[in-house]
Image (tube, rainbow, N blue to C red; front, side, top):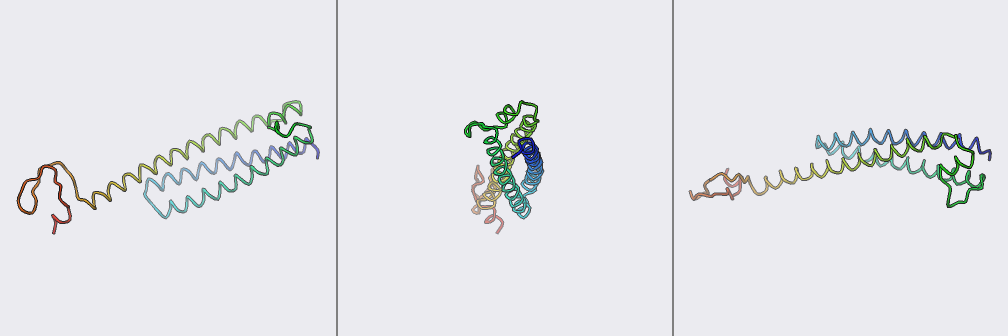
Length: 166
């Protein structure tokens, strides 16, 4: 294995991973829109697309690990110490691996934040949906004085909306 050619392949693979994380960000944006629109079909479709993209990223990362490990062996870097920094250092620096690593780390951090934000949006939509369902199930609770079927005054409107309408 020629180390310089292996570095070129490793850089191509890292660039591919950066692009895949950019694509994942676009999918997260679509997922957030589906959550906000409360569109279950689109939510399901986005979840499938995100799952596929994550699988693609995982497969690319496995290839990156194998290539880095093989390159580390050729460069006589101890297996437990193989990193992009150690490969760059073993080749005398200036390989460009560290710059791509920084871009990849930034992409991973952005994706993690977007995922956390989507989870928060989902929890908010879920809470709002549960609130609406609870209101439909138990009736409106307005706190405005109201009357029951027998003409008695309630301070909490603690009767069922649907039974009031019957």
